[in-house]
Length: 399
Length: 225
Image 1: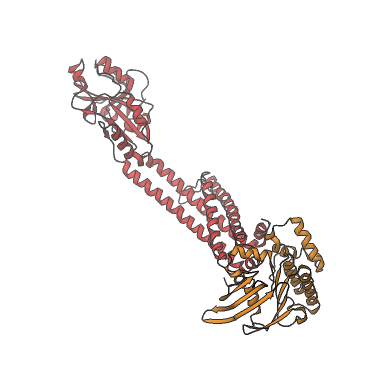
Image 2: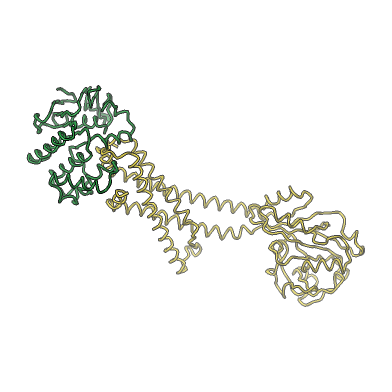
């Protein structure tokens, strides 16, 4: 060990050069990874949430009100233009247990012909605290006028298109669904699989169906389950798992998850490839440095071999030297990287006004492992060379 | 073979450089007994250094074998050879082969690193040898700061401190003045007498034959007694 550190000090210039090589490589990897991860995080943030939702229901050719007391109501539980049957709450728990499901929420969508408006009006009963509801139906973020739903039993919000078609404004009272409902807000939820004309909290809709429309269908928990998956890349896996378990379900999804998933896979692969290329660069550089060092030291190593220093001892020295240099290099590289990113960020410098550098603690272990592996592998080449050379040849530089 | 400490059988060495082949040694057969002092005499380029390097396993022969204590050193693994080099063989090189950026003390110390001795024992031994060779005050100087004679002395100490049973000395007095040469030879002979060491010395002629039990002359890569 004494001669190990002495060796580092003895060839000061070479040690500095070698450490600088590791430090520069580390710095380079850190900056590239920093940009890559930031880019990945930003784009993934957008892409992961693209097309992560779908709805589940069981279609039927009869309306629920065939069996209810109010046969003249001309209403039915509906989803995507077809009648559906009622579902019970325990199905939510079953779906939530499927790997990759982030959230599942009940949805009660009822369509009723209203003579006053001379059209079917769909009423969606939503669970307001659910991310699945937000992405499949609507949420407070879609509000464009008025206020969103509260716990009051007579409040509804309407889709902008519906409000415009019937000339409705915030504060209007609608005599529909066997009662008076006050329009508190207008939303524009965009293209969603569970879109309705008006929305109310699911408990209120259940009450309307049971008490005002006198529907006696059992349960009345919901007729649609809204599902949100964790990542658009596993969207199709979740659907196929769900279909395997519950074959009677109809699943409806917009396929926008597919391009998102493909884009994320491309970004992921590109990032990995970049990291591998940088690692190979580091490896070649450090192997070259260590090999050059061995060739420069060949006479000395030959002398040590002639004095009885074993290849094992000398190999250990080479490996440890390489590892020590790599370790010091990686620490300096990380420190420099941190400093540069700090300076860039504190001065709000963005390359091309776009690329943002973010220092990520979690890449430190990766960098250390990568650089030490580089140092280790770099040390192997000189060792192979060393083991193939005789002491006399090394002394006479016949390596 | 049993009575011999060192035995070279049909030893040949060729150096091949590009299209040029040089026969450094041809068909050398040599038997050296324990505690013998052998003088290998010959002009520069005769093959003395090559023979010494072959005998201590520092280079590979093109053909033939070298036995030390009935062990064929050409067939040993690198680590086995290292073990013999650290425990039993001492080599004094013609060009000293000191490490220029190591101090005198360190240049000697590296010879006994493989023995894993206690630091206090190492220090005591080194200082004792340095005192014998009048180099005590030079212990912390870089070897490159020494005179040629002093460097040769350090090279000799580096060999003796290992307490080898065989010493191969390549021109141990070739680069030094007569006084230093005498001093070095005295030390070598005393050591040989005290420790019953086998000594093989290569020289171009500046070492008197009276020091040797047998004298061989090498010329054109061939040996004659």
